[in-house]
Every structure is written in C-alpha cells, then in structure tokens.
Image 1: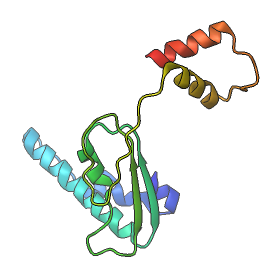
Image 2 (image 1 turned 135 degrees about the vertical axis):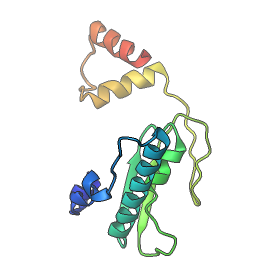
Image 3 (image 1 turned 135 degrees about the horizontal axis):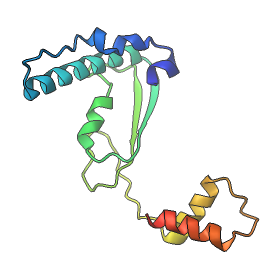
Length: 143
C-alpha cells in the first residue's frame, strides 16, 4: 500500500523479482533464511525509494517490537529522509530505536470505552442511547 500511496512501482516487491525460490529439498531453516534475505532486500529497496521523503508509518497493536525493525527505512548515511514510526502496543517492552519516546497510557474505563465506541460509530451524542444499544456496546467493550 505504501508504494501505491507514493506512486512507486509495486512490482519491485513481487516474489518473482525477489528471487525467492524454494527447492523441494529445502529444510524449514533454509526456507526461513531465504524469506529473511528476501525481506532484507525489500527493506533495502524501500529505503532507497523513500530517500528524501517525509514519511509517517503507523504500526498499531504490535506484539513483538522486533517487527518494527522491518519498517525502519532510514539508512545510516541518510540525512535527507524524515521518517516517523508511530507504534502502539500493549506490551511493556521498551522500544529500541534511538530517539524513540515512550508514552504510557492506562486502559480506558468501561464508560470511556463505550463513549468512544459510540463516537467512532458516528452516533449523535445529543440523542438518547437505547438500553439495548448500550448493552450491545458494553458487551463489545468487555470482549
């Protein structure tokens, strides 16, 4: 999606162009190594394509901060690119990027979560909520 948004050719990232081929006798370890090499190549291509751009990437609900490394497109010698990586997570792991800022937030109360649910659903706040709608929203929030 990033490529389409900024007008880059998505075919650069097709499997056929990554030279990711599995042989019938490849072990799982060999397949995993080939996948990582293809992903590293894709990351390198994306780093070159984004050079000089201002980019905001949002990763929502990340469970393994190591996954964020795949979206750190700034090369060590790149002073032209302005990349902001905004990550939300429920884990207590420390984020590992230099210059990162952690903002800890408490969970919403049930009342706040129901209010947010109705707001995001486009419900007019001036109207009275039926008890069945409220019960449904509360059921969703509790899940």
